[in-house]
Image (cartoon, rainbow, N blue to C red; front, side, top):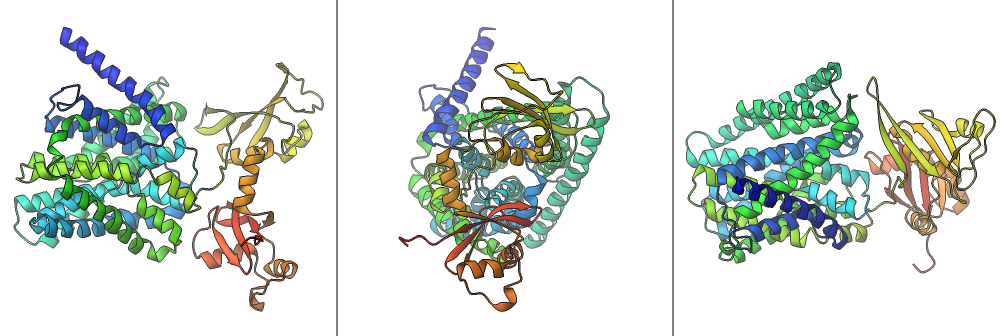
Length: 576
């Protein structure tokens, strides 16, 4: 009984300290994953904690369970609209990109570490997947909003490249254990089976779970448990049939997160907290498992291997995979640099240990060292690089009072409150506000000095009043533009990014050229700015896209369903 109490005390203290550490790391810009790994190492047998933990099977079980929960939550948080601009390049990076990274790093391992070519490719496959989720946590904690094309590509890649790396790792281990038959045929068969079953069970299971949960009447607290248990069942069934359980649970999360759903608010909050707990537990366990003194003998080779991965393999894979999609060189550099390695490579490094491969301990230590180097070098420079490459866009929303509502019938609405400032963009009079509000929004109440104003007659809202509205989530950005007084420093930042003037996307190019004395081919004169930008980009336009037109620069300011509705105009600076 005393041992049980000690374990509960130690476990809860570790989690509590980890949560507090996340607040500190957000301020200093350190990757949270690095902190948890280091804490696990400190609690381990070489650290002050002195805990001897070497149960690879238990670490593999907990790691796979945590990774499934994290991928499920990532799917729930992925919006369909991001697929429009990020799906195709992300799938290229998640499949062909992982293969290229595996080949380059694997061949280097064969040459430098004197490994068999299958062993070298195994090491390359283990470090083939990225952990962009850690990067987004770092960016969000520092208030950075990336261009949608870059952000969507990284987010979708982070969820879909893990199954590819897992497939390669398992297939190569099987080949090492039983190198008979046609290797190419074995890999192709495994790929079709794992990805096919993963996609089938994930998509079908996601729709079935939505249908089932929306028809069950239960306590609100049981809905999140039903969704979680259903997702893990899909993972287990798919994996038992030799499919990719990780792909299945990620796709199921995407389907569930983008369909009308009962108790959506409780489900989102529950899985967000559960995913964070899974991250903490997984990283601490993996930190406990490693013996820091065993890293020193492989440190020189592992450092060189990490540099090849960071500076050669990942950038080359990104460049080749993004060639058909016309990403700018700035975007390619950033995506190439954000190849952050995290928990997945360490979990995959457990597979050779479980399989009993001779070189498994060396592979595990090299992979762990590579992850540490990646977090130290890439993790600490992501924010500075995003700003240096001008990939940060001004925030589209601002901090206001906001409460999500669970409306019967799975309709999504939010209760939004604003405190009007002197320089708010709109002066609210009830009748005027009703006509200017987005179609999915309604004015609910106006409070002045803590008193609810009578809305039977005309009511004028003054500076200092609190205005409350019921709104569709898709209208929140427009409401922010109407009611939020943007600070002068932020307004100057927007002007520096988007330019001095705002033009309509329907404005004709000929009129712009006549006003600013620009020269364009006569046949282009009748084009609208929207048509011109979409033609030159040859891609889905997103906020922040730029087009040089003579001496001026056009910057996409607002997009609605693939149509550019607002364009910023940046004039040439006198000091250029």
